[in-house]
Image 1 (cartoon, one colour):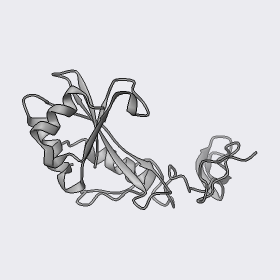
Image 2 (image 1 turned 45 degrees about the vertical axis):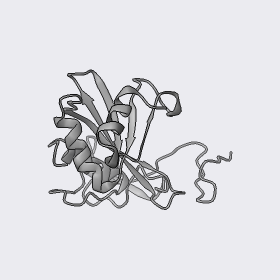
Image 3 (image 1 turned 90 degrees about the vertical axis):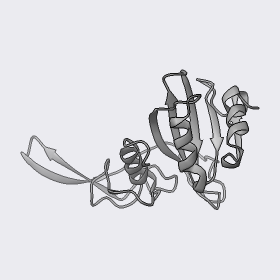
Image 4 (image 1 turned 135 degrees about the horizontal axis):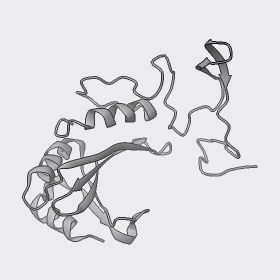
Length: 182
């Protein structure tokens, strides 16, 4: 199912779009956002077109994030969320220099998921400590074996303590990642 924006983009720049999804076919349909799937080599021209074209004007980059699919060969899916204040429209682009704020979102995505963005000027940790090992939003991230470094007001010094990220009913298995056992 397509929306008016998807149909327009498929008509104007068909070679940049693999396919489009809009409406009830999506997992979430809160703002009737449309999702455009593209290839990595067409990502920059498509986003530039969406930002600069008179009929789209997606001037605001809202977020860049990733989704972890451990069962897929291409495990991570990067998602760009754009907003057009002029046309009151939102769109998701799934594979920046075009939006300066993308640097911060890409750093956060790298820190949480381990997705590498080539050409990024400063790809380093932004939410976790610099010595932190791993990427905590990956589905295979272990929940035990980490330490927390914090200031203890009672002891008036920095302390390091074992940290357990407890979560009920979590059992991760690569063969069956969505089944939970009690």
